Length: 196
Image 1 (cartoon, one colour):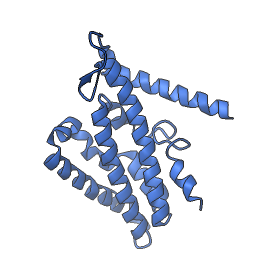
Image 2 (image 1 turned 90 degrees about the horizontal axis):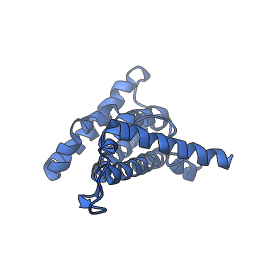
Image 3 (image 1 turned 120 degrees about the vertical axis):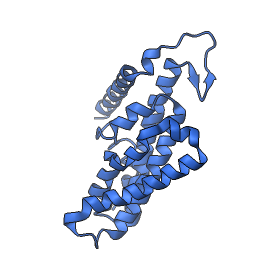
Image 4 (image 1 turned 90 degrees about the vertical axis):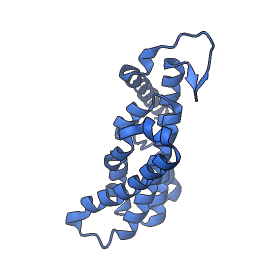
């Protein structure tokens, strides 16, 4: 097994959002600010990595007919840990991300990697897979949030970028998210077609 390939595939070749098209709901919802994108990335990376480790460890003792409920229980455990930690130490972030923290339980990226990869591979490969997917997810969130917040609010991390510039509020609402994501998909396809 090529461990480097397992790590890097989630960043570009199998990027969960731009290639696999999964995890779009939190992607579009939380990218109104770079801060939200950062915390969602951290939360998803923690849950994805920890659940991949546990599922890889228990894969041989889990009966096949109950594997999905068991995987969801494992994922829900780590989501609950994230939710409690954010509520205790970052209440503003917890409030800002709202329902999208508990919805990590049913995030297709996490359940998909558990079913497709961690349940069939060893611990090290599962960790590398999780980290690569988490980085790919995070990079996509950051780019999307950077464009949306800077154009839609003329701010980054609460600081004004260009004094006096009128922001385009359309970028903060759903059409701005879809437009920006569409441009990112177009750009990625263009780069991939040139490589071929």
